[in-house]
Image (cartoon, rainbow, N blue to C red):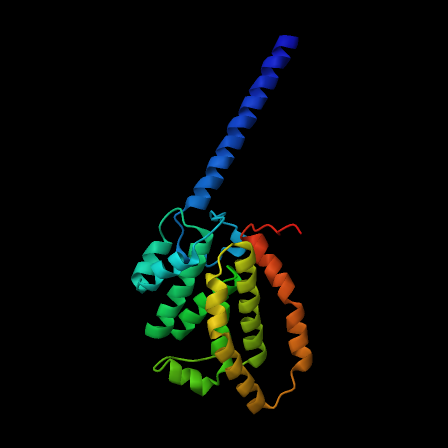
Length: 234
């Protein structure tokens, strides 16, 4: 009887081991993909478990995608074994291709996806620039396209400040200042445009702007969690 119990226990453990191993294999296969762009555009909190580089080279990443056209970016995104930071910027550059060539609405969708799901500072900055402008000005920027959005200075300020805060987080915890330097390069001009638009609107947004500033720490913490970044011990 004791021997049978031992054999039964070993069988259970073996079955559990095989089941767990199959689960790990399945999850690894899920992470490797390939994934469609539609699936990558729904990757909330990296539920696809895309791999993450500890020290991404953002200059190399952006240089790679800057030379790709829309079709090349779409093909790259749908290959297996994509990395989270790279997908974030591939979606950002894909958004820019749509904005300049085909569809403002599709481009804006990919900008929001890159920003809100992948917390991409470049995409936040771009959206801040767009929402700073009036609808007529946006139409001039993207002629022959259907523009449905309106100027939204509070939304623009939120996006711009988020871009700067996340750029700082990347610089401090990813060991790469490329993102921060890029955002900082356009910060003064972007903020000057926003301040001019704010004066023209004659809206008092002091209370709302203070509330926006209080949300930035949470965004930085979300960025660190998404990209598995560790706080430096003091």
